[in-house]
Structure formats: structure tokens, C-alpha cells
Image: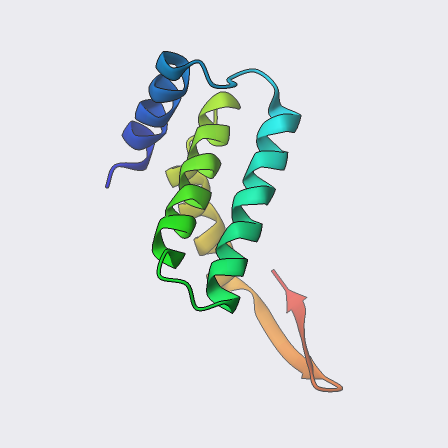
Length: 99
């Protein structure tokens, strides 16, 4: 999957269907709602968990496109940053000690 191409396709679908493409606050709320639906599907062992997770990804990529972010690049950068972090366990809790 090419994430940037998918972001653009998701945005184009939003435009063609008349969905929100300007109210960022509303998109965050809708994304939150999709995460809640995915969690509910997981907790209740529903068959549509994969579909709900896909909705989360679709809303996330759509939001990234609205904000002009290359989500693929951002994910790669964050994964590199996370790989370099050092942690130690303090009182049973994993604590980051360096970036």
C-alpha cells in the first residue's frame, strides 16, 4: 500500500461524497468514535473488528491529508525515533530514560 496515494484517494472520496474536509476538530471526534467502535468490536469478540480497524486507518489517513501531512513519512520517522529510545523498569513500570 502506498500511504500517500491512499490518503489522497480517501480525501477524494470524502469530497465526491460530500463528507467533511475542513472541520479538523470534527474529524478528530469522528476518529475517536471509530477507535471506540474498534475497541467495542474487540471486547465483544465481534466479527467486524478488522473492518472497524480499517475505519480507524481511513479516518486517520483522511485527517492526515486534510492537514497536509505525509503520514507514511511521519510513521517512518516515529518508528526510527522509537527504535533509538532506551527504557528501564522503575517500580514495575517501563520508563523512557533517553531518546
